[in-house]
Amino acid sequence: MKSVKTFVVVAALSLTSFGSFAQSISATGSSLDAAESAIAAKAQEAGANYKITSALANNRVYMTAELTK
Image: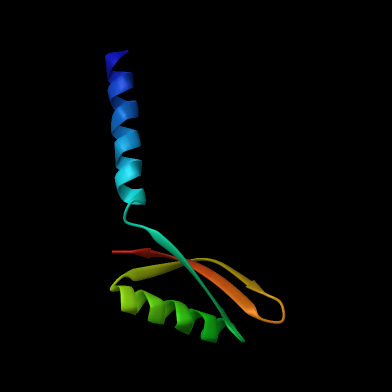
């Protein structure tokens, strides 16, 4: 039972530490390339890497990404 509690505490702390470094950003553009360029510029300005998490294309493209350092 003690090992289960320890595992739960370690798992919770590891998820908290990873979540504290991530930041979500969004951008719009007329194309996927334009929206991604805006995301890349914001990431470079923050000195971080990015991972695109979603993109919605209708008349304009709406894209979200997660910045990680």
